[in-house]
Length: 160
Image 1 (cartoon, helix red, strand yellow):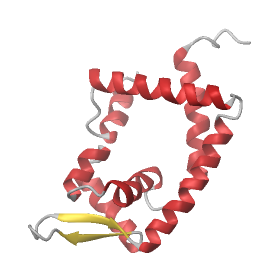
Image 2 (image 1 turned 135 degrees about the vertical axis):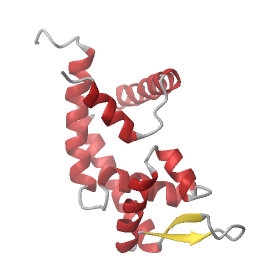
Image 3 (image 1 turned 90 degrees about the horizontal axis):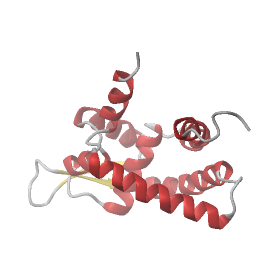
Image 4 (image 1 turned 45 degrees about the vertical axis):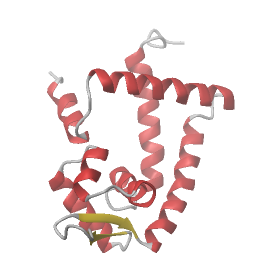
């Protein structure tokens, strides 16, 4: 036991660091890392109405998204297709290669998550995830995250 055991910031920091290390190892070779995974997941499962909608859904700046999609397209994981009703609008869709890669990444991420949560029983893991989901929704409603880039900027701005 240490003096910091009950400190929420310290506790979250330790768990977050372990999670980031484990998941970076799982998706590290994917263009864009975690962001690339989120885009590939959305392109496969959500099928956003447009590239712009995808930016909003994931909280990724349009300029950053363009470069990320370029990298994912070069890796043959997604493609941008013109919308049938408006050629200026682009749909981001996963390729066959992208869908297969996502299945592999899902398994690797599940393994990484299990590694981080291994100190908890299965019931405690489910409860933790449910509580964190509830807390994240509450906190996001109070102070919505429009962009993951803004989160990093906010964190950097609070440093002395």
